[in-house]
Length: 509
Image (cartoon, rainbow, N blue to C red):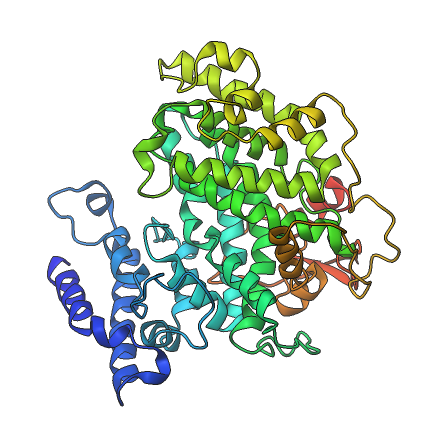
């Protein structure tokens, strides 16, 4: 195995400059050469996943194959060199390396390696954020649409399944790895920046009509980016939000992990708040226990109370966490004040739990006890704190003490709930929030996503059988949809158990 890995890494180095070209600017034959290399990489990783044994897993003398050894070979994709590393805006075409990987069936094969779909498979592939998120954003924008949505559906199920499985206290780190940690790349905010740029530039192509028989009817580029971001917003984010509290309460390892993923989740909140406020079909976004908004905000406030933040600034520590939290809170103040008012008491209480857990484990609290006693919000956003935000602090304290929160646009009457209803106009927004509102208008409603990729209608489904979501059979018929996003339609389930669980949970759960 070591010789094969060395050969694959050497081949990558030899092709690095060529692979970084834009797909339309490469020399003749370059795409074909890189495509063959990707075939070898993928086939080797698939083989490694099938033949792992106990010696492979735990480093015995006979260790030969382990899927994790192929992570750098599989998940590293070259991009054209630029000052912003490809983060600023959606390119007109993918890099040559991304195009070659897509031509080798990259998306569907990655999904299959994430699912452990055969009895002899012992470990599954994790999509770690240490690899280039901009390259993966290109995958979302230029990959085959239905295969991309299928991979995102698998990611949501993996987080849900990993978060539901009991983990012994001494194995707490496994909880992170088996839940949100295994899909970090898909939670990156890079696609958000691109969608916001698409909205600002008016470059979003008309989606046009589509149906179940036309899964790839959306063109590559902005239309597929819209679909992928929409799927993440509706299906992956709620699951990731709910998985975070146990991770953050594992305070013994807070300074080692957890901050980058929290920052990524916070970066999505302005888009979700904008959609909730302005799109009639999106009024349930961020609402209820299925989202866990209070706990997510409490996670961040709790992290802000702990020391050791600066230890992780290379991936986004205190210097990135608090600005992301402030941006998210400002969006909620302007666009969902009643929702924020309801979430703040729980958020503050959860932050206190993080503090207590840290103190019990003799972990230093970065903010003095006296300051914390004056209030969690005061400690984080007050004078002398790491992120002094006096205006935001005043707004939050007013909401926390029961002051008039202002109008929650999602709760206001907005006429029909169909996807074709006119968006709600929110007056007097700051310029940055107005841009988020424009970006949120590009999101697709859940009913349209079901047309693009029919999946089990049970939002708690964790069935990872078979190689992919798009190939999963849905033999059980249920009632009509509950109207989320208009259209409804007959609901289908992968099993009778999922149908019964969904009916027992009630509408929208």
